[in-house]
Length: 52
Image (cartoon, rainbow, N blue to C red; front, side, top):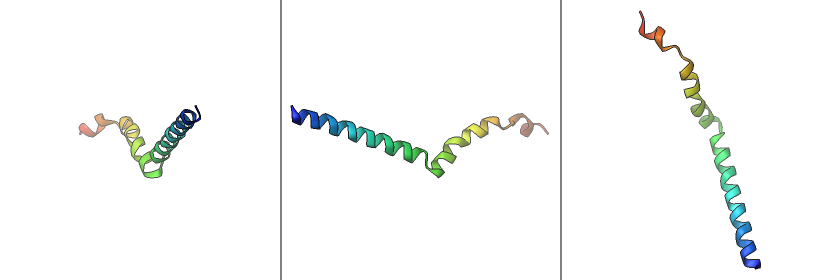
């Protein structure tokens, strides 16, 4: 029973560390800027660029 408990505990800790790693990598400076850039492109007015 102790081996199974340690296995599940180790699995949970490993998954938690993986989740934290993904969050930290996603929220880093360069990636955050790249991920938020489409938000600002959607707000650009394309109609004014095409009309002259």
